[in-house]
Every structure is written in structure tokens, then in C-alpha cells.
Length: 188
Image 1 (cartoon, rainbow, N blue to C red):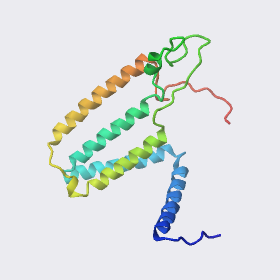
Image 2: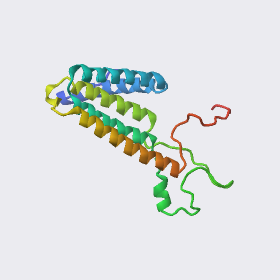
Image 3: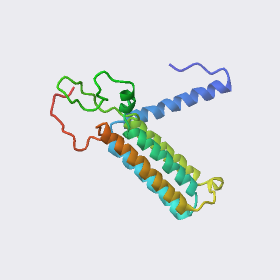
Image 4: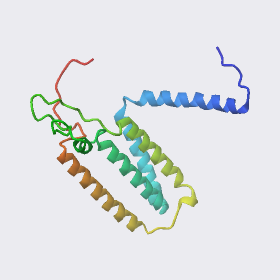
């Protein structure tokens, strides 16, 4: 059964946009279980962007902006959804700030990311695509001395990662599953 004819040109455009949005969402939903392939595609896109910046010898401000945004996304990805330092400040009744249980009667709380993996991948891919497209327009090719941007980004990366690692050590959480014990169990 076909949908009724739209009344105005705007509703026709809205109907088409909704149709293509649903198709795109269906492809995104189908790609969800293929984590490695999604990240490989994003890596190839990033290499194409880096090659474009290197060969064109310009658009360094676009690359710097992309680097800052990706750093922000990564920090949200490795941060817990519920910050243990805020919970400790609010005064937890037992004094445990949401880390691993220290006594037998403590409740275990798993690590929940502030930014889930799929949203991290999707935002990263969108940002790299936008940066790649911006690198083809001369209006975004601002004259800057790129070594200063690289040094500033490295300092920013070092300071923020040091702070984040100190936070991880202080509140005893590990945002990655590498090296964690996996117990065999019945899969549901």
C-alpha cells in the first residue's frame, strides 16, 4: 500500500528525507556487530584525510580542529558515565566511590562508558568525513605555522591523558577489556 500523495512540496521533501533517513539507519543498524570492519573503514578514511593534508600541504587548521575533536571524543569514551569523584563528593554512605568492591558485601558496579563505542565510532567517522570534505575548499585553508599546532596538540594530549590516567588510578577503573579475566558462562 502506497502512502498518500503529499499536499505541498515541503511535505514531499520531508517524506523523501524520512525515507532515506530510515534506509541509512537500517544500514547503520546492520553494521553494529561488525566492530573491527567499521574501525578499519574509519582508519582508511583517516589515512585518506592525512594523505590529503600531506600532499596538499595545507588545511592544517582543519587537521588541528579534527585532532582536538577526536581527543575530546576519546576522553569521553574512556571516562565513566558516573564520575566516582562526584559520587565521593556527594558523600557515599560507605565511603566507597564506585570502584571495585573492597569487602565481601560491597556491590560490584561494572564500567559504563560516558560515550558508547558505537557512538564514538559514528561521531569519529562523521568528523573525519567532514574534515576530508573541508580540505577540498580553499576557504578553510587558513595560513598557519603548522609546527606550533602540532606541538600545542601534543602538549594538550599529554596533559589531558596524564590527568585521565591519574583519575583511573585513583578511582581504580580500567576502561578497556584487554587483560581482564573472562569467565565462561551460559550465553543468553
